[in-house]
Image (cartoon, rainbow, N blue to C red):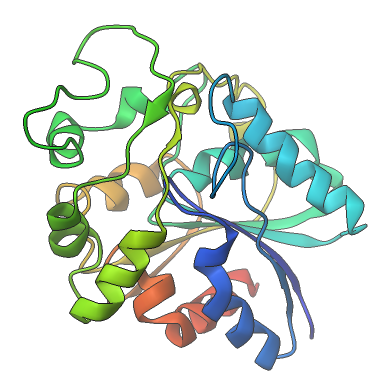
Length: 250
């Protein structure tokens, strides 16, 4: 049975990151859309872009394409967008899949759940972290990670050439999306099928961060595991497509 997926990328990425996964899902007879979030990608304005703007850009895609029965897939930061979409357009959604994704509690910010060790790792040497621990600030731009962090922590299972080519396509992202408090009063009471795909070799965050820390925030959900780093859409797209289909099955 053909399914419709909307794939939501993470920090520094764009819809382009899902290209090979979209192709693999299409070969399996499914339809997949991979919009680029507001303020992300090449040549776009980033200043003043909010988390809600990111959500609205996916709502616009769903409405423009008249999509129904959608299975949302959120990677990393994209998980927080999935949460808000589930609240805003529940009548269009058939299920939620979180791929080593952030899951927020009501009124949390993205930066509230990012460990200091992660912020240190993505901060260029001789620079201050984007938001010092314990301080509320405003940043217009969240720079892409240093090459060494990308290669060693995010995509360590890729060839040097693949790691380099994907890193070169990353873009800074709007900083405000990480500082907005997200109202999620309805999300945790929604009756929607939820799944979490955990990548066993993910080194972007400390051990146990994505599973069980983030996955447990979903309450009752299906948990699937696969090999691979944080960037399995690049390194294992065929396997990831299979896991996405499996996660969407009842």
